Image (cartoon, rainbow, N blue to C red; front, side, top):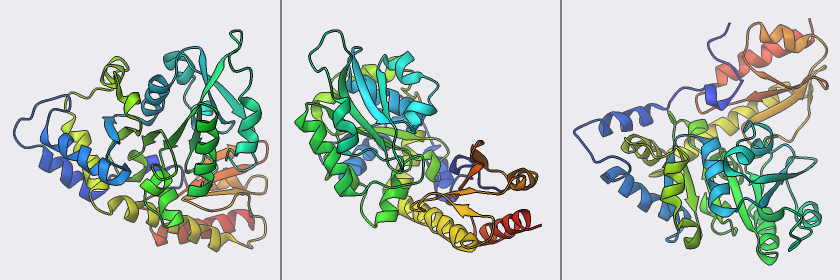
Length: 343
Protein backbone atom coordinates (compact mmCIF):
# COMPACT_ATOMS: atom_id res chain seq x y z
CA UNK A 1 0.00 0.00 0.00
CA UNK A 2 1.36 3.42 -0.94
CA UNK A 3 2.12 5.73 1.97
CA UNK A 4 0.64 8.55 -0.10
CA UNK A 5 -2.60 8.75 -1.98
CA UNK A 6 -5.48 10.79 -3.33
CA UNK A 7 -8.24 9.92 -0.86
CA UNK A 8 -8.67 13.28 0.86
CA UNK A 9 -6.91 16.45 1.85
CA UNK A 10 -7.71 15.29 5.39
CA UNK A 11 -5.17 12.51 4.85
CA UNK A 12 -2.32 14.95 4.21
CA UNK A 13 0.46 15.79 6.61
CA UNK A 14 0.59 18.93 8.74
CA UNK A 15 2.48 21.83 7.17
CA UNK A 16 5.89 22.36 8.86
CA UNK A 17 5.14 26.06 9.46
CA UNK A 18 2.07 25.02 11.43
CA UNK A 19 4.06 22.61 13.55
CA UNK A 20 6.55 25.39 14.26
CA UNK A 21 3.70 27.69 15.30
CA UNK A 22 2.36 25.05 17.69
CA UNK A 23 5.83 24.53 19.16
CA UNK A 24 6.23 28.27 19.70
CA UNK A 25 2.86 28.40 21.44
CA UNK A 26 3.97 25.58 23.72
CA UNK A 27 6.02 27.82 26.00
CA UNK A 28 5.02 28.98 29.44
CA UNK A 29 1.49 29.22 30.77
CA UNK A 30 -1.42 31.10 29.25
CA UNK A 31 -5.00 31.59 30.35
CA UNK A 32 -7.35 29.02 28.87
CA UNK A 33 -10.61 29.17 26.91
CA UNK A 34 -9.41 31.85 24.52
CA UNK A 35 -8.18 34.41 27.04
CA UNK A 36 -4.66 34.33 25.68
CA UNK A 37 -2.55 36.63 23.48
CA UNK A 38 -2.59 34.36 20.43
CA UNK A 39 -6.38 34.19 20.32
CA UNK A 40 -6.58 37.94 20.80
CA UNK A 41 -4.20 38.40 17.89
CA UNK A 42 -6.27 36.02 15.77
CA UNK A 43 -9.31 38.29 16.14
CA UNK A 44 -7.37 41.06 14.41
CA UNK A 45 -6.19 38.77 11.61
CA UNK A 46 -9.72 37.54 10.93
CA UNK A 47 -10.95 41.14 10.90
CA UNK A 48 -8.28 41.94 8.32
CA UNK A 49 -9.59 39.19 6.06
CA UNK A 50 -13.32 39.57 6.66
CA UNK A 51 -13.89 43.13 7.88
CA UNK A 52 -13.97 44.98 11.16
CA UNK A 53 -17.43 43.70 12.10
CA UNK A 54 -16.39 40.04 11.70
CA UNK A 55 -15.97 37.99 14.84
CA UNK A 56 -14.17 34.67 14.79
CA UNK A 57 -14.52 31.73 17.15
CA UNK A 58 -11.99 28.88 16.89
CA UNK A 59 -13.42 25.35 17.12
CA UNK A 60 -12.08 21.85 16.65
CA UNK A 61 -14.07 20.50 13.74
CA UNK A 62 -15.86 21.42 10.55
CA UNK A 63 -19.03 19.55 11.43
CA UNK A 64 -19.21 21.48 14.68
CA UNK A 65 -18.63 24.77 12.86
CA UNK A 66 -21.56 24.03 10.56
CA UNK A 67 -23.84 23.01 13.43
CA UNK A 68 -22.88 26.10 15.41
CA UNK A 69 -23.71 28.35 12.46
CA UNK A 70 -27.13 26.73 12.25
CA UNK A 71 -27.67 27.20 15.99
CA UNK A 72 -26.65 30.84 15.78
CA UNK A 73 -28.96 31.60 12.87
CA UNK A 74 -32.02 29.40 13.29
CA UNK A 75 -34.76 28.54 15.72
CA UNK A 76 -36.01 24.96 15.93
CA UNK A 77 -38.97 25.55 13.65
CA UNK A 78 -36.74 26.90 10.92
CA UNK A 79 -34.93 25.27 8.03
CA UNK A 80 -31.78 25.58 5.96
CA UNK A 81 -31.83 25.21 2.17
CA UNK A 82 -28.88 23.33 0.68
CA UNK A 83 -27.75 21.39 -2.35
CA UNK A 84 -28.56 17.69 -2.22
CA UNK A 85 -24.83 16.92 -2.39
CA UNK A 86 -23.93 19.34 0.42
CA UNK A 87 -21.63 17.99 3.11
CA UNK A 88 -24.13 19.22 5.67
CA UNK A 89 -26.81 17.09 4.04
CA UNK A 90 -24.81 13.96 3.24
CA UNK A 91 -21.84 13.68 5.60
CA UNK A 92 -22.79 15.14 8.98
CA UNK A 93 -24.58 12.00 10.26
CA UNK A 94 -27.76 14.02 10.83
CA UNK A 95 -26.02 16.45 13.20
CA UNK A 96 -27.85 19.53 11.85
CA UNK A 97 -31.17 17.95 12.73
CA UNK A 98 -30.08 16.09 15.87
CA UNK A 99 -28.01 18.82 17.52
CA UNK A 100 -29.13 22.10 15.99
CA UNK A 101 -32.73 20.94 15.56
CA UNK A 102 -32.80 22.50 12.10
CA UNK A 103 -34.46 20.78 9.15
CA UNK A 104 -32.54 20.66 5.88
CA UNK A 105 -34.39 21.29 2.62
CA UNK A 106 -32.25 19.96 -0.21
CA UNK A 107 -32.35 20.60 -3.94
CA UNK A 108 -30.74 18.54 -6.68
CA UNK A 109 -28.17 20.39 -8.77
CA UNK A 110 -26.12 19.66 -11.87
CA UNK A 111 -22.79 20.76 -10.44
CA UNK A 112 -23.27 20.97 -6.68
CA UNK A 113 -24.09 24.69 -6.88
CA UNK A 114 -27.33 26.37 -5.88
CA UNK A 115 -28.73 29.26 -7.93
CA UNK A 116 -31.48 31.75 -7.11
CA UNK A 117 -33.70 29.92 -9.60
CA UNK A 118 -33.23 26.64 -7.74
CA UNK A 119 -33.69 28.18 -4.31
CA UNK A 120 -36.68 30.47 -4.91
CA UNK A 121 -39.34 27.71 -5.10
CA UNK A 122 -38.17 26.33 -1.75
CA UNK A 123 -38.90 29.60 0.06
CA UNK A 124 -42.53 28.68 0.49
CA UNK A 125 -45.38 28.74 3.03
CA UNK A 126 -43.72 31.62 4.85
CA UNK A 127 -45.79 32.47 7.91
CA UNK A 128 -47.73 29.20 7.82
CA UNK A 129 -47.51 27.74 11.30
CA UNK A 130 -47.96 24.22 9.93
CA UNK A 131 -44.81 24.40 7.82
CA UNK A 132 -41.14 24.61 8.66
CA UNK A 133 -39.90 28.15 7.97
CA UNK A 134 -36.90 28.72 5.68
CA UNK A 135 -34.29 30.83 7.47
CA UNK A 136 -30.94 30.06 5.88
CA UNK A 137 -29.37 29.25 2.54
CA UNK A 138 -26.18 27.26 2.98
CA UNK A 139 -23.62 26.62 0.25
CA UNK A 140 -20.23 24.91 0.15
CA UNK A 141 -17.38 26.73 -1.54
CA UNK A 142 -15.71 24.70 -2.95
CA UNK A 143 -18.62 22.32 -3.43
CA UNK A 144 -18.48 18.60 -2.76
CA UNK A 145 -18.13 18.10 -6.51
CA UNK A 146 -15.03 20.30 -6.70
CA UNK A 147 -16.81 23.21 -8.37
CA UNK A 148 -16.37 26.81 -7.27
CA UNK A 149 -18.87 29.61 -6.71
CA UNK A 150 -17.69 32.93 -8.10
CA UNK A 151 -18.16 36.08 -6.04
CA UNK A 152 -20.98 37.10 -8.38
CA UNK A 153 -22.77 33.79 -7.85
CA UNK A 154 -22.45 34.11 -4.08
CA UNK A 155 -23.75 37.68 -4.24
CA UNK A 156 -26.80 36.59 -6.24
CA UNK A 157 -27.71 34.08 -3.54
CA UNK A 158 -27.05 36.61 -0.78
CA UNK A 159 -29.29 39.15 -2.49
CA UNK A 160 -32.10 36.60 -2.76
CA UNK A 161 -31.67 35.55 0.86
CA UNK A 162 -31.76 39.09 2.16
CA UNK A 163 -34.72 40.07 -0.02
CA UNK A 164 -36.68 37.18 1.46
CA UNK A 165 -35.56 37.70 5.06
CA UNK A 166 -33.07 34.81 5.06
CA UNK A 167 -29.36 34.55 5.80
CA UNK A 168 -26.54 33.09 3.70
CA UNK A 169 -24.06 30.64 5.22
CA UNK A 170 -20.92 29.31 3.56
CA UNK A 171 -19.38 25.98 4.46
CA UNK A 172 -15.83 27.03 3.75
CA UNK A 173 -13.98 23.83 4.54
CA UNK A 174 -12.12 24.48 1.28
CA UNK A 175 -12.71 28.21 0.94
CA UNK A 176 -8.99 28.74 0.42
CA UNK A 177 -9.09 26.47 -2.64
CA UNK A 178 -12.00 28.45 -4.05
CA UNK A 179 -10.21 31.78 -3.56
CA UNK A 180 -6.97 30.41 -5.01
CA UNK A 181 -8.88 29.10 -8.04
CA UNK A 182 -10.48 32.48 -8.69
CA UNK A 183 -7.42 34.57 -7.85
CA UNK A 184 -9.29 36.58 -5.23
CA UNK A 185 -9.14 37.16 -1.50
CA UNK A 186 -11.07 35.22 1.14
CA UNK A 187 -13.01 38.36 1.92
CA UNK A 188 -14.03 38.76 -1.72
CA UNK A 189 -15.93 35.47 -1.51
CA UNK A 190 -17.44 36.22 1.90
CA UNK A 191 -17.82 39.76 3.20
CA UNK A 192 -17.86 41.55 -0.15
CA UNK A 193 -20.34 38.98 -1.48
CA UNK A 194 -22.89 39.45 1.30
CA UNK A 195 -22.30 36.28 3.32
CA UNK A 196 -23.66 36.36 6.89
CA UNK A 197 -21.97 33.33 8.49
CA UNK A 198 -18.92 31.29 7.58
CA UNK A 199 -17.50 27.94 8.62
CA UNK A 200 -13.83 28.58 7.90
CA UNK A 201 -11.75 25.49 7.25
CA UNK A 202 -8.12 24.86 8.08
CA UNK A 203 -7.64 21.14 8.60
CA UNK A 204 -7.97 20.38 4.88
CA UNK A 205 -5.36 23.05 4.12
CA UNK A 206 -2.36 22.04 6.19
CA UNK A 207 -3.49 22.42 9.82
CA UNK A 208 -3.29 19.76 12.51
CA UNK A 209 -6.91 20.39 13.44
CA UNK A 210 -8.50 23.83 13.69
CA UNK A 211 -11.50 25.56 12.13
CA UNK A 212 -13.37 28.74 12.95
CA UNK A 213 -16.88 30.12 12.93
CA UNK A 214 -16.85 33.64 11.50
CA UNK A 215 -19.95 35.74 12.11
CA UNK A 216 -20.43 38.79 9.91
CA UNK A 217 -23.56 40.20 11.58
CA UNK A 218 -23.20 41.59 15.12
CA UNK A 219 -26.63 40.30 16.16
CA UNK A 220 -25.54 36.73 15.44
CA UNK A 221 -22.76 37.08 17.98
CA UNK A 222 -25.14 37.62 20.89
CA UNK A 223 -24.85 34.59 23.12
CA UNK A 224 -22.59 32.71 20.72
CA UNK A 225 -20.01 32.10 23.43
CA UNK A 226 -22.64 30.09 25.28
CA UNK A 227 -23.61 28.15 22.16
CA UNK A 228 -19.99 27.22 21.54
CA UNK A 229 -19.58 25.98 25.11
CA UNK A 230 -22.89 24.12 25.07
CA UNK A 231 -21.95 22.47 21.76
CA UNK A 232 -18.70 21.19 23.34
CA UNK A 233 -16.42 23.33 21.16
CA UNK A 234 -14.84 25.68 23.71
CA UNK A 235 -11.22 24.52 23.74
CA UNK A 236 -9.53 24.83 27.11
CA UNK A 237 -6.07 25.24 25.54
CA UNK A 238 -7.33 27.41 22.73
CA UNK A 239 -3.97 29.02 22.11
CA UNK A 240 -2.97 25.91 20.17
CA UNK A 241 -5.96 26.22 17.83
CA UNK A 242 -5.34 29.93 17.42
CA UNK A 243 -1.64 29.35 16.74
CA UNK A 244 -2.54 27.10 13.81
CA UNK A 245 -5.05 29.55 12.35
CA UNK A 246 -2.55 32.38 12.72
CA UNK A 247 0.11 30.39 10.88
CA UNK A 248 -2.37 29.82 8.06
CA UNK A 249 -3.95 33.27 7.82
CA UNK A 250 -1.41 35.84 9.04
CA UNK A 251 0.48 35.69 5.76
CA UNK A 252 0.01 33.73 2.56
CA UNK A 253 0.31 30.13 3.76
CA UNK A 254 -3.41 29.58 3.09
CA UNK A 255 -2.88 30.63 -0.52
CA UNK A 256 0.34 28.70 -1.04
CA UNK A 257 -1.19 25.48 0.28
CA UNK A 258 -4.47 25.79 -1.59
CA UNK A 259 -2.89 27.01 -4.81
CA UNK A 260 -0.48 24.09 -4.85
CA UNK A 261 -3.26 21.55 -4.21
CA UNK A 262 -5.30 23.06 -7.05
CA UNK A 263 -2.30 22.98 -9.37
CA UNK A 264 -1.69 19.30 -8.63
CA UNK A 265 -5.32 18.46 -9.45
CA UNK A 266 -5.00 20.35 -12.72
CA UNK A 267 -1.80 18.44 -13.47
CA UNK A 268 -3.50 15.11 -12.77
CA UNK A 269 -6.45 15.97 -15.00
CA UNK A 270 -4.07 17.07 -17.77
CA UNK A 271 -2.04 13.84 -17.52
CA UNK A 272 -5.21 11.76 -17.87
CA UNK A 273 -7.00 13.88 -20.42
CA UNK A 274 -7.57 11.90 -23.58
CA UNK A 275 -6.45 8.60 -22.05
CA UNK A 276 -8.77 5.90 -23.48
CA UNK A 277 -10.91 4.46 -20.70
CA UNK A 278 -10.73 7.56 -18.47
CA UNK A 279 -13.56 10.08 -18.55
CA UNK A 280 -13.24 13.21 -16.40
CA UNK A 281 -16.80 13.84 -15.23
CA UNK A 282 -16.66 17.21 -13.45
CA UNK A 283 -15.01 20.55 -14.14
CA UNK A 284 -11.60 20.59 -12.43
CA UNK A 285 -11.80 23.94 -10.67
CA UNK A 286 -10.17 23.21 -7.32
CA UNK A 287 -8.21 20.31 -5.82
CA UNK A 288 -10.58 17.50 -6.85
CA UNK A 289 -10.69 15.32 -9.93
CA UNK A 290 -13.72 13.13 -10.61
CA UNK A 291 -13.58 10.39 -13.22
CA UNK A 292 -15.29 7.25 -14.49
CA UNK A 293 -13.11 4.21 -15.12
CA UNK A 294 -13.74 0.90 -16.90
CA UNK A 295 -15.01 -2.07 -14.84
CA UNK A 296 -12.31 -3.44 -12.55
CA UNK A 297 -9.90 -0.52 -12.98
CA UNK A 298 -10.72 1.19 -9.69
CA UNK A 299 -10.37 -2.09 -7.79
CA UNK A 300 -6.96 -2.68 -9.32
CA UNK A 301 -5.80 0.82 -8.42
CA UNK A 302 -7.11 0.56 -4.86
CA UNK A 303 -4.71 -2.31 -4.25
CA UNK A 304 -1.87 0.24 -4.36
CA UNK A 305 -3.35 3.70 -3.93
CA UNK A 306 -5.82 5.34 -1.56
CA UNK A 307 -8.85 7.15 -3.01
CA UNK A 308 -12.63 7.02 -2.77
CA UNK A 309 -15.18 5.50 -5.09
CA UNK A 310 -17.65 8.38 -5.19
CA UNK A 311 -20.54 6.65 -6.97
CA UNK A 312 -20.35 2.87 -7.14
CA UNK A 313 -23.26 2.59 -9.57
CA UNK A 314 -21.66 4.94 -12.09
CA UNK A 315 -18.10 3.74 -11.30
CA UNK A 316 -17.20 7.36 -10.56
CA UNK A 317 -14.12 7.95 -8.42
CA UNK A 318 -12.79 11.02 -6.65
CA UNK A 319 -9.12 11.92 -6.48
CA UNK A 320 -8.16 14.70 -4.06
CA UNK A 321 -4.88 16.60 -4.09
CA UNK A 322 -3.40 18.26 -1.02
CA UNK A 323 -0.87 20.86 -0.02
CA UNK A 324 1.78 18.12 0.15
CA UNK A 325 0.92 16.31 -3.10
CA UNK A 326 4.02 16.37 -5.28
CA UNK A 327 4.44 16.34 -9.04
CA UNK A 328 6.08 12.94 -8.62
CA UNK A 329 2.98 11.68 -6.77
CA UNK A 330 0.75 12.91 -9.58
CA UNK A 331 2.87 11.48 -12.37
CA UNK A 332 3.24 8.10 -10.66
CA UNK A 333 -0.49 7.86 -10.03
CA UNK A 334 -1.37 8.95 -13.55
CA UNK A 335 0.89 6.22 -14.89
CA UNK A 336 -0.80 3.69 -12.59
CA UNK A 337 -4.22 4.79 -13.86
CA UNK A 338 -3.11 4.33 -17.45
CA UNK A 339 -1.86 0.83 -16.69
CA UNK A 340 -5.13 -0.04 -14.92
CA UNK A 341 -7.37 1.11 -17.75
CA UNK A 342 -5.13 -0.23 -20.54
CA UNK A 343 -3.69 -3.50 -19.23
